[in-house]
Image 1 (cartoon, rainbow, N blue to C red):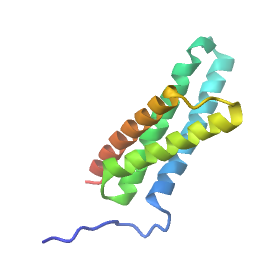
Image 2 (cartoon, rainbow, N blue to C red; image 1 turned 90 degrees about the vertical axis):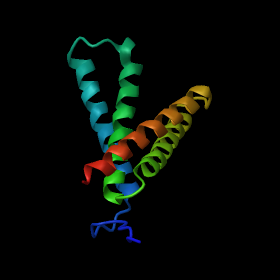
Image 3 (cartoon, one colour; image 1 turned 180 degrees about the vertical axis):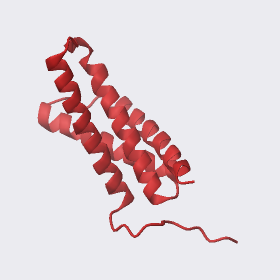
Image 4 (tube, rainbow, N blue to C red; image 1 turned 30 degrees about the vertical axis):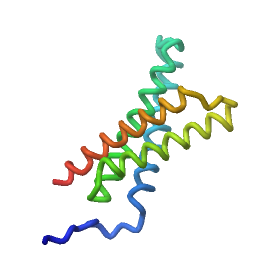
Length: 129
């Protein structure tokens, strides 16, 4: 039986935490870029929800990718867990900061975060090779 190597680097940071940090950095950066584009170009605010969901999707994908790449094992699982945590953080911020109600849309958002994070994790594992 061949032993499984769990992690290659000397990193003291948890892969999940690193993935969450990357996801949040991507989200903040993309939000600033979209804000500048809205202010300086002819983009309309009616399509803002689409941009917000795209930002979240890209952020969760990047976070799942980084998390799985650093972990080296169980990419879909680690990316899915990152998607759960990211989705819960965003839902909690919306609930506490903007008095948004937790409803079916929040559950759909959470499921989509899990799927996109898992997909990012799958590609993150395969990027190591």
